[in-house]
Image (cartoon, rainbow, N blue to C red):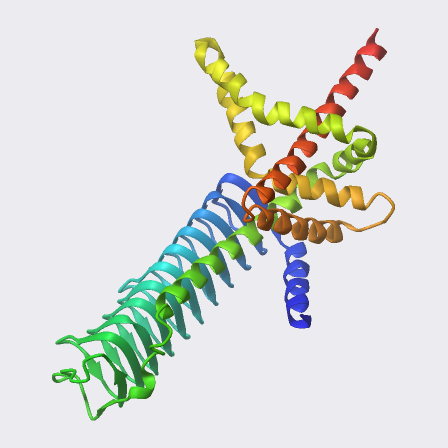
Length: 395
């Protein structure tokens, strides 16, 4: 627990020093001299960044060079610009097509290391499948459903998967375990190799250069655990999704609280007296807004208004639990004096709880809808009251 708290403290303290952006589409086209933290639908970095990059998005593209670490979570991650330090990435599809100054740690569905890639440290991979065509100056360790090694590994290799194809070069000692192992004509083992396969008679052809291959039953995965690969893959996907969610939620909470801190603090003062009315107004918003949007699309002249309302409604649905978490946090802070980052941490914890509640059939979703409805209803009430007061003053 202390280690976890220390990790979060380090993450949040360094986050304060950097630049934060959250938007649907983010494009970095000017030289950045500090760390940057990004969350959005698509992220494209086409300029030099002197500091770390922490990014969460559906699609992430790194075109120019990064002078420090890259930490990324997304469905599609493509790194074409050199990264001078480490890369830690979680995603559905990952492509590394550049030089990496130190370690490369990946978890994903499909991983491709192109022939242009050079990893000067170690490559550690957890994935559904990986095709490694580049060069790893350090050690390669991969746990995957399918592994294709066409490139070069200068130190040890530890490969575990459902099927493994070796058609590249491994300089250090290696351990290989898979149900199926295939040795290609271009394979080269410059040191001894231990292996396990369902078929112990593997034809290493002319690949052993001053080395020997030894069958080792100790490398066989536990046959009693029939879900060995499936469970490992599920765990990696779940971990990746949670990393993506936590980074994104944290960035969005920072921006929301920074922009609307006073508004949130003022809004929650009405909660005790208006909670039932807020819930009714919130339900009217959640259920009535789609009908209003549909009506505007029927009228040709109303299409631009409909598109605007649709974007607002989608945003409110996607980030409703984050807004509700911020409101609850400001309500809890009424008689306290929490600082900015304490509010963010408490809000993040509440947002995670709300997200986990949705995993409970019916009851969890119902609780989340009620909380979100109260939040948006409270916004509507405060807005209408302020508008009414302005009209009275104007009269």
